[in-house]
Image (spheres, rainbow, N blue to C red):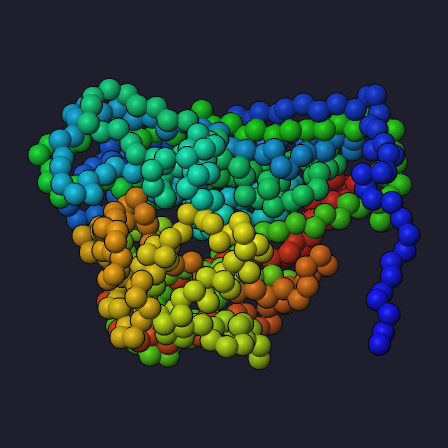
Length: 486
């Protein structure tokens, strides 16, 4: 019988009294708040908030709001990426107050305040470092699968515009005249935001610019079964008072000299994460085996996230922000000759397995990630198709902005506006965590999504996907140029 393995003698951490390192007396930290360069406000049409008995998404106003980030001042200055946020204000003026009634009548922001933005772009010396398309939709995907209702009742309701009694954005005032004002401060999903856990050497980079593109479609749902008097705005929804908020740390000349000695070939190398978007349409009437090509061609794709959406309407009042189950009884990601997972997922009969793979793709842990805002009925919300025979009992087909309780449930129907369809899907492609480029190279073999649809789709379906990929930022100390390798 083998002996029990022994370990080296040592002391517990509670008996280690060594002090952490100290920074130079000349080191300091300070906040940097930057206003936009050109456009300082974006005003949408007055019809961006208008009640309807059949939901549709009116136009918003797509504009580029750009920020010049102070940079290139000294190689002792760094940005603390964890503190980067974007703050702004929504205002509008109601000229005629609304008088509406009926079950599920609501005027809600969809998702969170990030829904006001369609894209993020980051440049250095006019060279693109990062581009994230469908930015608000991606933020909503991540938020829904990391936050729970208690957190939405807390700080999320203050900073990001989450509602305190639903799983979507705040309710907007329409039943009284006057000017209404809502402020937001959202974390930045970027390599200069919470995607990077190292300080970014902003003092060693020249001409850093961030561009946020506002939404083309209004991220506001206004629905009522009975409209006695529709709301009329005298001033359309206006986004203004934009501020890019950052924290800079000047480590001092002594520490900067020490850091310069550690550089390889005079360059900084920073590992981060970014997201590459691919949108593909599945035609109306599609049925049976389908193969969807996702144009995600990166060196190290750690996971692929995606959702299905149908056009805004009473079944899908939140438009693209309703992630629906399209009646698939087989789902699997293929990259070259490899399949993820090996055994196909059946979202109709075994949806719980699919959710487990999603949590793995997001890098989550069971205790936290299984306590998100997504409920069983939200995850199993079917859109644009009938519920396949033999499905899990929780699969429900919404109608007239309401999702009926599953048979046998002691709950009632709920509003899809307040509890949106949340059929989010993901595939974990990582070889091993904690190493460089632990994902799969998809440059030569982009991923395919293999599906089998139990019934014909009732409308065109849009598959929005993102490849969560490793990115290495290379910053040349001499030329002060930043290059991204994805």
